[in-house]
Image (cartoon, rainbow, N blue to C red; front, side, top):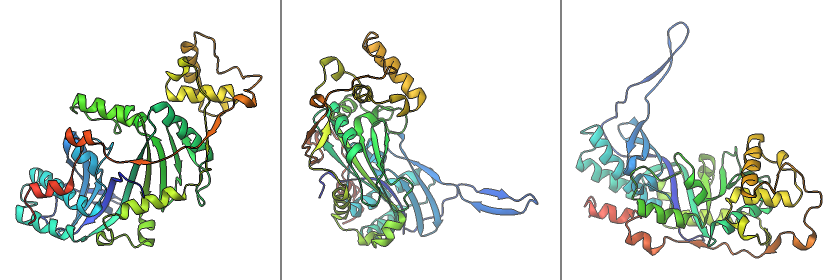
Length: 367
């Protein structure tokens, strides 16, 4: 079973008493001005570094929540907590504190304590969970090479065709049960938007996290309502301490890989310093492949321009290689050990990890 399992997303309904949240109402009118439907909008609760979680009152005893617990508490999701049974009560405590600031009187201290006890007993509904584990390949170039190779040869029995994008491979897009992804965590963090580190994050801690993430491939499984219902995992009490690890392990073992997988041949020092996307494009070009037919038009011309600049015009990806690499220089097949990694010790020393148990104890909300 994978080590270092993290809950990267949780959507569910918490059975906790509270004063119903009032956030207005969205109304849809018919042409004759009669009401077709009305719905209360979701409320954003801010966590650390402005990362938000969505909540909504279904009634006075049911609170719908959806968001990333790791980012809510830590500001990042390079690693994090993986035990749902302790994470959900702590998640509620953080949300309740935020809601109390926004809507005073919603969650008084005694109500929060009662809610935490119910949640520790597993009294909540699980609607969707994302589970992840990470694999360390020592450097980003090797991680990207393994990712590209797995995208070519990795298959699931019921989801044969993967979707390959820059820095990721996805199986099961459109599935109502399970979606599985393998992606380069460092590359994801360097992209702008929700995947990067938030503004105000400690610069030194952020640099260390980015360096660590650049070595990793992240294996992620999105468990959807149909899967949870079929496995009897809709109720929080049905999750044990290691349930997430078992489920992630099952999915990883279902990924069909040969004993050895093809990795790109040794590259020149010049090419080794290129971004991963350009190295992969260059390898395909050397093999005589038609890159213009493999990637979107704008992406192809962007790659072409970048490679022309890096090689001072010596390599033009628009010109097909007439004699692809001979058999003695094709990518070699390597035995790749994909061993999951846990949370590094330095992360605890720097305070970059959120511990749900410690969080609950420090607030003295349970005995």
